[in-house]
Image (cartoon, rainbow, N blue to C red; front, side, top):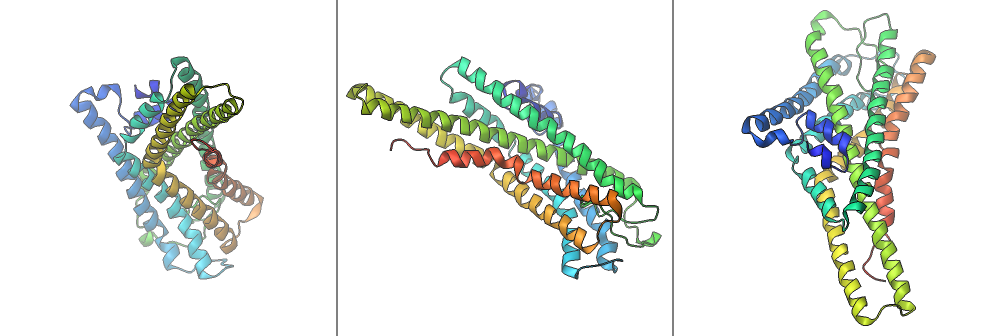
Amino acid sequence: MFAEKSFAPLPTLILELFGFLPTRSDETKFSGFLRRAIAAMHVIGAWVSVVVQFLRLTPILMQPISNQNAGTIVTLFSVVSGFSEYGRSAAMITIYYFKNNAFPRLSAGITGLFTYKSQRKRFYQKWAKLARFLSLLILMLQLIGQLFNWVPFLWFNENQIDTGSGDGRNITVRVKPAQSLVPSSVVWGCYYFQTSSFALSQQMLVQAVTAGASLRTFLVEHNLGMAKLQADIKIGIHDRKSVEKELERVQKRYSDILVMNGVISGAFGNILCIALRMDQVTVLGMVAGAVANPPNGIVHWICACFLVLLFGCYCTVLFWPIVQVSEEVQEFNIFT
């Protein structure tokens, strides 16, 4: 499998299992077609789930909401978070589906930046640990988040519509049988695609974050090497010929890192942008939901606060390795 030589093996393996990355079995046309078909099924299912979510929220959009404590704009914004959560996942896996060859090229590019095999093995083990930790942590948090999202829904004894916004609350709307636009069997089928697409999109983020961590590693090594070379030149350790040779090596390293940065941006730039913006919208929508329709009871407040904190971490803490890359870039140069 491709995951065996990847710098982020666990998320890569998960994406292979769902058909979003090529495997060794793709040597035959049928296996390659089957893999792409499985991935396409999840992409289509994710978008169908977004449409179904809209149909399920139609009664909320068409009828007055009870216990409304905020204006119409705030109330509508609270509903938007339901679309942003699922639309985010659908958009991310769609982009990845059409760019599935970018990740293998990125892995090959990272491998080519290593001079020594022992050095590559050491760093790959470090990145694999980071990817494995983030991958398992995110899967666990998603499971807990789903539990907290369903607890308030099961807590009610009356018929209500779950907004699906992940804010630990359910807006009370009396719905007649004729207003039930989507059969329950379809809803449960879409629930699978909502859950799986979100999990897959998070694994894609783990790949992006791990790629950012690998880029930071090369930047740190480059900057340390430049600082050492500058110090050696000042005290006259190197002669002119050795300095020119070192500068050629540094310039090649500089070009390779720039190419790698471009490959990472091409593979994950749009995915990172969508994840960050949509998670921010989801958090704001959850807060707006709490203002428009405050949770009832301590259980609902706990669930709402946890889910707001969870999505807040998705769009802040998860991106910290990317922020570290930005900080390291400020010192990145050929020679100063």
